[in-house]
Length: 151
Image 1 (cartoon, rainbow, N blue to C red):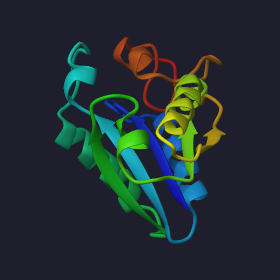
Image 2 (image 1 turned 180 degrees about the vertical axis):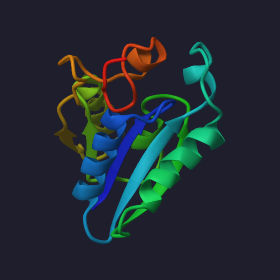
Image 3 (image 1 turned 180 degrees about the horizontal axis):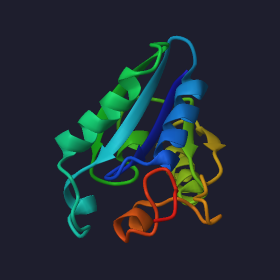
């Protein structure tokens, strides 16, 4: 199965890893997982973003510890629609509650281009110890660490 997901993944945290793990699972044996990694215009207004290469390397290191059952391709994207509209055809997209609306928009646009809709696989937020979602902004603000522990 061909599965896609996308994001900035500036601070690789437990929520991102859960998203990656679910996508890896959905891709299954001999599947392909496409990770759209933002660069350029889409992140120009964000502060303290690591380089594309640094973020890509962290993702590759995360997957290096997994049994190889799927191929992983990390592709630069400059909008939230690039990967799902411009590259390969996919079977599914894996999203969090934060990005589910984008997945519906992607399917609407895919239909306009004559492509089949993607199966949308939504994972729940991964919660920190305080019951609130783990997020990069909370980590930057030193509320929690990458595993959701309160600081």
